[in-house]
Length: 461
Image 1 (cartoon, one colour):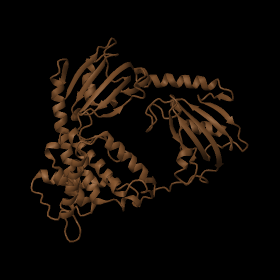
Image 2 (cartoon, rainbow, N blue to C red):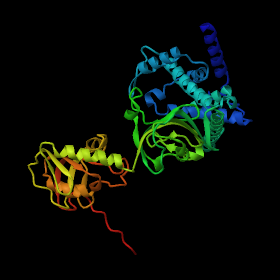
Image 3 (spheres, rainbow, N blue to C red):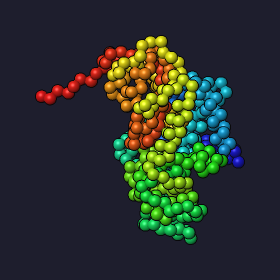
Image 4 (cartoon, rainbow, N blue to C red):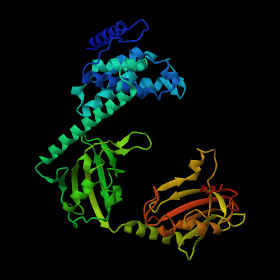
């Protein structure tokens, strides 16, 4: 069987070598007549982008013909042994950010592996979204080869990008519509409306869910092909309460809110929501990778259980009261009439910070559940080691009141109830009604304008 496979790959290799022009470029006579031809070529060419993040020391020596062979091979039925072998080879060759070692495995072997990885990635994406019938691997390999040689100009980059986006969107819409119709046909399905289907997995024993509350709940969000996109789960082996989080009614998708009137506390439900009742054509962008957490037009399957419902902010307020009570009991801590608690970790030897002064300080911010939200020590590693400077005239009320109780050179823990922090609205990662703890190291203090550059006032002409 292996001899037959090797013979097949060798035949493809010979064909690839014979399909070159005088400049050595492959497939000089590609013809794209149908949409299937165009989208296959475009996808093949676009997959080359996936290797652009490789170090130049490796990228510049990869064997393009072996990558093409690997791409076609990856579109076949790749085994786990193939994957394991390739991981071993890639790890052995790429030994450092700019260092490669070919003493054990050759560049040809590793090139074949990178091609295989991209071919398998292409097939999985198409298979998951039902696009295999509209794709031709023979045409795609030509686009892939042209991409490797940077001659993929049969379709302009702009047109190619839009073509792939539209193609993927159409597949997502079709797959989502089919999944929603399948859900409607389930024996225990409750059709809330044309875009929302509710399936009860476990009956709730508590009160009916009420709108405009805050819920302690867990959820799993999947797409039409059951890929998990978002979840509150930390450890599936732990009980629901461990994996739950607080979520406001208004932060849940419209489809969930439509179905909530049919749910009860403690019940476990599976909810099928069309894109127009979820995140629509915008999706949920991934701010880190530049892609999407939830793609545009994705139908969602939401599995959720509400453990309790409360007034907005009630749970955070109760947690905060406990944090403040515990802080006040600590050695070296003092509770002030304004409502904050200041714990001295290390007494400063410098002067007290003056009200309204400029201050340079490091800090670590945690919320009432102990989650670290900000760390200026880590941030400083990205901006030359400089600690942040701020004016006490432009910070939250708790800092304005409490920092003047601190001395330069000291380290303190400042506990702020929500009304001295970011209040009922929160701020970015800081949730509404959050009690906050700042561990602060006061490095320097000065008169207003000495550490913080004042913004010039705008001129009206």
